[in-house]
Amino acid sequence: GSTVSASAQSSVVYVDTRFNEKYADGHTFGVNAFSTIQEGIDAVSEGGVVHVAQGTYNEPLTITKSLSLIGTQQISTEKEEDISTIYGENSAATILVRGSSAPVEVSISNFHIKGGTHGILVVEKASLLISGNRIDSYKKNGVTFGSKIIAGEGKVSGTVDSNIIEGSGV
Image (cartoon, rainbow, N blue to C red; front, side, top):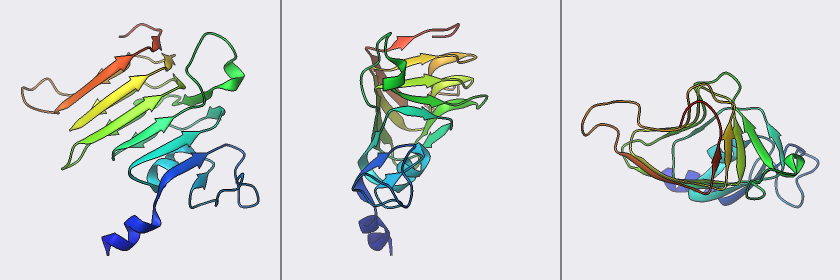
C-alpha cells in the first residue's frame, strides 16, 4: 500500500554528479544518493529536503510535491565553479512546479538556474519561496507565477527574495 512506499522514501536526499553505485559519500546510491536532481526529487518524501552538490546539472526539472531544493551556497557574482547550476537548455521551463489535488509548498535556494523559456514556472496550486539564486539565460521570464489569466485558476503564490535575475523578462 501507500504506507510501504512512503516509508521507503527518505526525508533527506543528496545529489552529486559524481555519485554512482560504487561512490555515494557514505550514503546509499539509489535510496538517498543520486547523480541527477530529478531522481532526488522523485525519491524524496513529501516535505523532504534535496541537497544538491556543486556542479552543472543539464536537466530541466519537474516538481509535483512539497519539498526544499537546496544548492551549495547563496549565489554571488564570483566562484561559479563552487555553485550548483541547473541548465534547462531549450525546455519550456528549467524548473516547473505543479501542484495537484493538494497544494504544494516548494523552496528553491542557492542555485544558478539557466535556460528554458522560463527559468522557474509555477502552475496549479503551488506556493514557492525562491531565494539566493541567480536566474539567467532564459528566453521569456526568469520567474513566472501562473499560466492562465482566468480569475480563480491556478492558485499560485510565492516569495522571490535575494535573487539575481538577469535577462529580458521579469
